[in-house]
Length: 179
Image 1 (tube, rainbow, N blue to C red):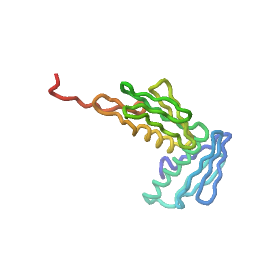
Image 2: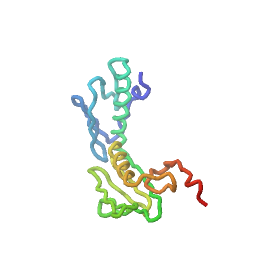
Image 3: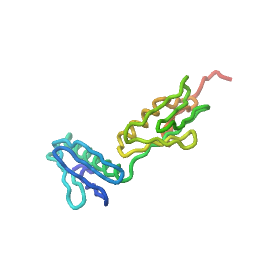
Image 4: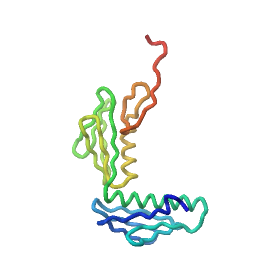
């Protein structure tokens, strides 16, 4: 049995889970999320928990078992607490600001980069160096944060660029003959 897959997902108060043919819908205080379910995996609601089962012990079934349980857990967590990714900007003259709901980045390009948030995502800027990407869909929050980071990835010599909070950049030594 999958160690992750066999754990039931507890449904907190105020959250409604609906099962239909091959789809699960989770509604909570922050919104509604839906997810397709693979036909080889069984999902049932029992005593205020969601239980995931599998039909056989093949390796592909085992991986789908744990994946499906993790996706359902992410749906429940998203509609109750939401998700957040924090990005840090480092570098002289690099900064971020809000322009309405859009994120305005000055990260060394000849022009300001304006990032429009997709539906369900909000940006917050603290000071000029910290960006918070928040939303209820874990996958979408991570993808939008990666897209913002891609505008100026941290470089290994001085460490300038946009990085995740807590990310460590492997630094390289500069020119050996400088001096």
